[in-house]
Image 1 (cartoon, rainbow, N blue to C red):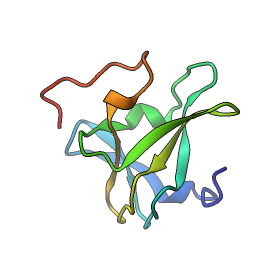
Image 2 (cartoon, rainbow, N blue to C red; image 1 turned 180 degrees about the vertical axis):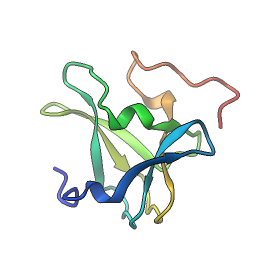
Image 3 (cartoon, helix red, strand yellow; image 1 turned 120 degrees about the vertical axis):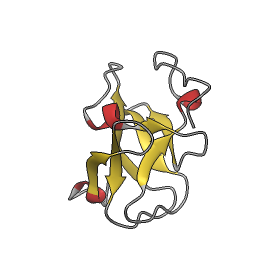
Image 4 (cartoon, rainbow, N blue to C red; image 1 turned 30 degrees about the horizontal axis):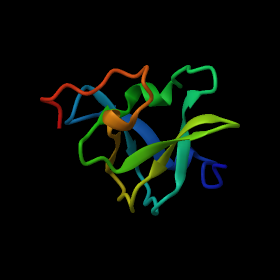
Length: 103
């Protein structure tokens, strides 16, 4: 499912302007690419997903797959150096919704 994920698609943790630490890419990511598993079938948040920050104008979204769980996909092309973000409003019910003051 993650064909370009041999080296984690260049994803890494770094200091975020949004909040604390975030996930960033150091490579170009094309539209609608699966990036990584965020939440397992047992509703466990993966280590990488713990660093996903919220944005109302996110560049990624989550899709539930019956064989893996919740997977992060790119909404559109993402440039090298960009932070990977999701809209917490579209997250599963057990994820804390965003504070209205968050971007």
